[in-house]
Length: 338
Ligand code: NAD
Ligand code: TDX
Image 1: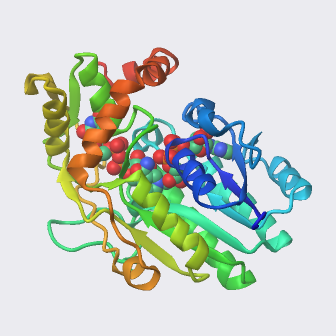
Image 2: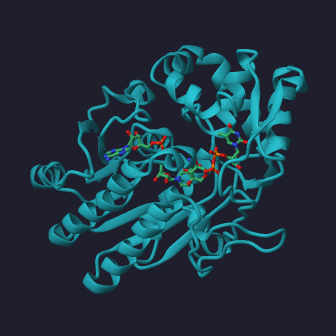
């Protein structure tokens, strides 16, 4: 039985928690979840597996070198998957400080210990946003030049460059994934889909930025987890793998779909002031991961959205607790008088 230990950072967030659950179910690995528990990190996201003897949670900050070094000193780590990040574009526009500390310095700290310790595989979870914005035609390929537009995407692009430089110079076994917009259970309700679902459930306005015609390429988080699994086990060091849902939608289409699934009126939609520097369109060409690693997109979008809406209906306590805490202050700052 394979008893190797994987270190997952940021496992108390949306994608990380889904990934840990997915990996424990599929493989015999031990998993250490290292998370700082920022506003976005929630131990409740993994409540169902917290007693699993193959799982361990460590509260630590990837921005703190000593804390990271200690985890590597005390454990024999086979592989690392770095999800830990500040992940919300709007917050990076309000204040980018934490984005630099976590997304850039934090990634650097991990790379440095990975170099010193010589682990077997390192996966950096990046994003399609590092490529910038597309016009009406074309898709992002792995060799599309990096052209990040927000403090968030610039911090993720910086981390990508560090990862590639460490791989090139020191030969560390690093790979990068760049995925498009995820949706699914446990997504923090500051992001488009859970914000709109939870606002609609509370009969609140649905704030659509600008003309609502910005386009994102949506992928269900389970499909993203399968893609990361493939990259972790079969990815070639020094390579970047794009991951996408081949599923381009305008924001307004998404918001209307949510209202229709819930049977709520479209009059809840409110067009508000646009996000500064708002990227117009993202679309991912994921031919490489499909051809080289056998990635298959499985989740049908309509079904995935229905399941997701159902999850938020059935887990009202989860998001009501979030929305009544410090989130309230954020919501006021971001949306009041917009
Ligand atoms: P999230 O905000 O839901 O979760 C981030 C997690 O990282 C939280 O648990 C938080 O506590 C933890 N964290 C933050 N700073 C930390 C630090 N300094 N040390 C340790 N832990 C820290 O984010 P998410 O949506 O799950 O995204 C996970 C990763 O995937 C990010 O790297 C993000 O850039 C990338 N990504 C996200 C999407 C998406 O659509 N959500 C798409 C592509 C890529
Ligand atoms: O209230 C809103 N109204 C609105 O119109 C919010 C929160 C968003 N939007 C728009 C902005 C975007 O065009 O919806 C679209 C999606 O917004 P977000 O959910 O904030 O995602 P995005 O900015 O596209 O970034 C996401 O995808 C890439 C994730 O948050 C990132 O972590 C990931 O890297």
